[in-house]
Structure formats: C-alpha cells, structure tokens
Amino acid sequence: MDVVIIGAGTAGLSAAIYVQRAGKSALVLEGSAYGGQIINTLDVENYPGIKHISGFEFATGLYEQAVELGAQVEFETVLQVEPKEDGTFTVKTADNAYDCKAVILATGVRRRELGLDKETELVGKGVSYCATCDGAFYKGKDVAVFGGGNTAVEDAEFLTRFCNKIYLIHRRDQFRADAAEVEKVREKENLEMVLNSNVTALLAEDRLTAVEVTDKNTLEKRVLPVSGLFVAIGQVPSNQAFADLVELDESGYIVAGEDCLTSRPGVFAAGDCRTKKVRQLTTAAADGAIAALAACSYSG
Ligand code: NAP
Image (cartoon, rainbow, N blue to C red; front, side, top):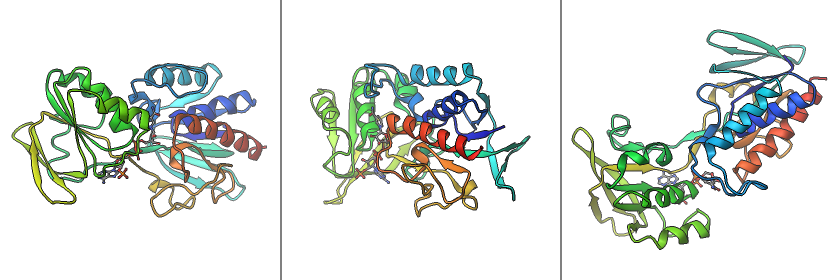
C-alpha cells in the first residue's frame, strides 16, 4: 500500500480521492462510520459550488467517489503507527498490520463533554450531542441547547422548527457563531437566550427533567424544566495514540502547518486534527488534497 489514511471524514476521504487520482493506492482506516462530523449537519450551505446539500449526502458522495476511484476503506480502529528504519510504516489495528510508504492522519476531533454528574448515564435519556440525530424525539417538548458556536446556534434553529420551547444557553453574551445565524435564531418566538450562564447540574429521575444554570456574573441559579439538553460546546482532538509518532501541541492537536507536514517525515496531518485557525469543510477538503500530494511525493 502506498498511503494509509487514518480517518474517513472530509479530510481523509478527500485525501483518498487525490491519492487514487495520482495513480497511487490508498487505504482508509476508520474506527466508526464514514463522514466525520459533517454527517451530523443537517444543511451545508457554505461549500463553494454547492448551494445546498445535507451533511449525510455530502459525506456519502465523498465516500462513493473515493471507493469508485479504487480506495480501500476498512472499518478498524488504529492502535499504533510504527515507523521503520527505511522510512516506511506499519499501521496496526486490533486484527491487522498494514505496511505502507506514507501515512496521513485525518483523525478529526470528538465532542467535548460537560463533565457533570450523571452525564454519561443520561445519554439517550435526555442528554444528546447531536440535534440532527436526536432532535425528532423531542417534538413538542421543551429543550435546551448549550454552546455559542455555529453548531449550537444551528442546532437551536433546527429545534425551533418542532420543539415547544428552546433555551439557548451560552457562557458569554457574544456568540462565536456567524452573525447571520445568530440573528436568525434571535427572531424565533419559541427561543429564549440564557446568556453569561453555564449548565451546572443535570436534574433527573430516570430521564432528564431539568437543567440547572448558573449566571457567571451574579452566581444566581435557575432551574430550566426541559426534557432534552443538546450539548454543543465544541470539540477536542483525540491523537494520544500518535503522541510518540508526531509532535502534539498542549491541547493535543498535531503540530502541522498549511503544508500538512508533521514533525516526522512521511507522516502528514489533514483536517481538524491539526493545529489551524479555521476548521471548516472547505479547509478539511483542501488539507486532504495537500496532504495526499505530499504523501504521494514522499512515497516516490
Ligand atoms: P466552536 O466553534 O468551538 O464553539 C464552541 C462553543 O462552546 C463556544 O461558544 C464556546 O464558548 C463554548 N464552549 C467551549 N467549551 C465550553 C465549556 N467547557 N463550557 C461551556 N461552553 C463552552 O464549536 P462548534 O460550534 O462545534 O463548531 C466547530 C467548528 O465547526 C467551527 O469552526 C464552526 O464554525 C464549524 N461549523 C460550521 C458550520 C457551518 O458553517 N454550517 C456548522 C457547524 C460548525 P466561547 O465562545 O465562550 O469560547
């Protein structure tokens, strides 16, 4: 195998397309489902050249394109990447070891959790990290969304379409989300913004019944009776398996610039898993192309 790509999100699948089209062979290893984060996005309206597409449709298109071009995709979790003396690598999963000339790390990020008591046991019983996946279970109900980025604001907007009341809780009074999206939700009659506040407790019997929020400035506590809480407070990288292979920054992102080069020759980093300012679909796809061409060139 010429290039092993770890991760089948937008960066990884874009890389696979570019590797195959460069006349080299790509193996994509993915621990869960293909598509990465975009699969949970209802509407994608900022990918140049495509006015509107669902995240699922976008991811499926990428996957099919990579496979039709001859990329091999295996659903296995990578445990380790072992560098060899001749500059090639062995990529190990629980069941297999794959030898390759170059590696692209496209591991993305995973959701950040609240870290509150009962959070884990309430997943599927009122606590969710994906409004597009679970929102429909809360038709006609009162729910809360926690976060101030594009995910939180878009989730809140989506839920206003069929939930009774939506509390949008954010720890500041300024949103990180695009201003246009914030304005869209601000106008919704069934949405209330709870700003400068954190979710500080989950109240439950066998399911979530309410969330406690605490105002950051006044320390005043308020109980919001909701049957669902959608947590959208960003993501964290999960690159610990590669800590001995490449340099990671203090937050766990792979240190790599726009050229996708890591601290180790032959290993490239693409997409949200690397140090970068803008984590978007477009930049993930661009990284996939850059890392693929660099990996092809390294593999000779
Ligand atoms: P994000 O932009 O990193 O926003 C995370 C939000 O959670 C921020 O408002 C942050 O607050 C808050 N937060 C972080 N840690 C927290 C904590 N411990 N407790 C409470 N609040 C916390 O994450 P995202 O919204 O998931 O978006 C990720 C990336 O995907 C972004 O680049 C985003 O633009 C992109 N995205 C794009 C689209 C689109 O273009 N259609 C849709 C979704 C996501 P502070 O603001 O105070 O830091």
